[in-house]
Image (cartoon, rainbow, N blue to C red; front, side):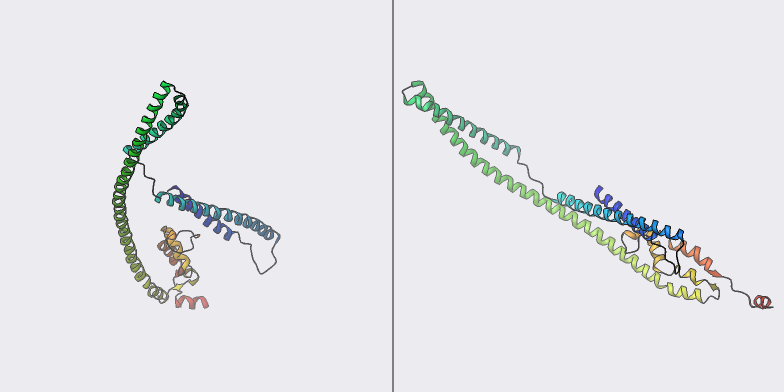
Length: 280
């Protein structure tokens, strides 16, 4: 659905705005700011105010889109009115035509009644004909009303059976779709179990690195062994939409981060002899 894509784009824009707001926080130092730094802070404050207004507008747009999306879903699920069958429509039309004919006869009968009372022979014959036709059409209307009632009852039963079968089929399809989701969720559990056991190996690996005897730059390793590194790895795989992480970070695969930083963090220790030579 196009609305879901629009909602996702707005949410991405909101995340980018929050990241932009974080990047434009005023500079803070334990000293007096220079004139250039003060100007930069003024620019950041102005940009921060602008971002705040954009975030408010984006949140309002996201709320509007969510409401429209919910209404669209409700409209799709709402039962559609059932059209009467062609046969029933024909009965409705015949009933309506007979009522119109009966109305015209009533008007004509009123015109002939006075003339017939005055002894007009032609008017008397016309009046008698109107009475006969009225009686015949009245009986026809009664019969049509009975026929319409029976036809509506029959169609209601047929429609009920159709909707019952349709509901059963939709229920079957829904259960099948639910089973697929259940299988997917169970597979996620298996992957998470594997991931948990894999992370359980991390403390021993970190301990082995610390005991290797190499000089370890802990400032570098501390940038890896924190949640932010894992958030970046999750973002790199596109899982930030499903897991509760800081989605404003840049996506960096964990292996790539470990390779680039750990190889720089592990340094060759100084040889004791070299240390002695340097001391002399």
